[in-house]
Image 1: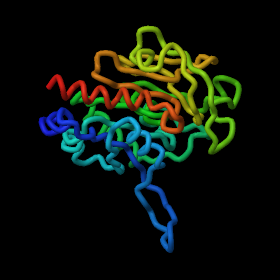
Image 2 (image 1 turned 135 degrees about the vertical axis):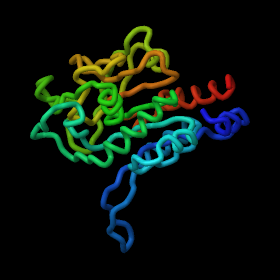
Image 3 (image 1 turned 180 degrees about the vertical axis):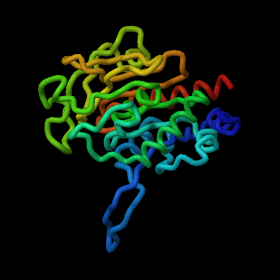
Image 4 (image 1 turned 45 degrees about the vertical axis):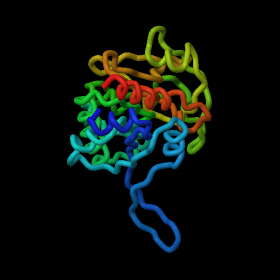
Length: 247
C-alpha cells in the first residue's frame, strides 16, 4: 500500500478498490458505440463492503503506477481466456476471447502480486489468477462432470453449495460450507505454482483458490456480487484497513 493510501485508510477514507471493466458495444439513448462497461452489481457490492470502486478498462500500460494508487484489486467475470495463455488449443465451446483484455488484466495482476496488493478474482478472475501462476483450465466443464449444472441456463445464475477447505483463508471468511451463485462453463484444471484449492463443489470441481503466504489473494468461481452476502468483499476491505493500521 502506498503512503498516501495508508494515510487515507487510517483516517477513515473509503479504500480504493480497482475493479476490472471490459470493452463492449453498447446502446444508450441515441448512441450505439464501443464502451468501457461493467455490470453495476460489482460496484454496488464494493460499496456495500465499505469500499470505493474504481473501474479499470483493459490497458497493459502504466500498471505499476496504477496499482500503487489502489488499495486492492477485483478481477471480474466475462469471456473465456485465450487457451494459448496456458499452452492449449481452443475448444469448440471456447468463446468471447478478448486477447487485449487478457493482456491488460494479466499485466495488472502481475503488478498487483509484485506489490502484494490484496486481490479477489471472481469467475474469470479466479481463472486468470491460476493461469498467471502457470496453471491451466478445463475449457468445457460439461465434458468433465457430465452435466450442465454449472451453467443451467444462459444469463441465469444457479445457486449451489460448495465445501471450503479446512484451515483456508476462505473458510475463515465463509465457514465450512457456503451457498453460492454460479454461471460458468470453464474452470480450473491444473493448479498453478503455489495455488491452493480452497473450495470444491459436490462433483469435485475446484470452486475457489488462494495463494497462501500472500496478504490476501483469493479467487472464487462463483459471483458474490450477485448475492446479498458481501463477506468476501468485506474481507478484502478489512484486509486493506488492517494493513493501513499496521503501516
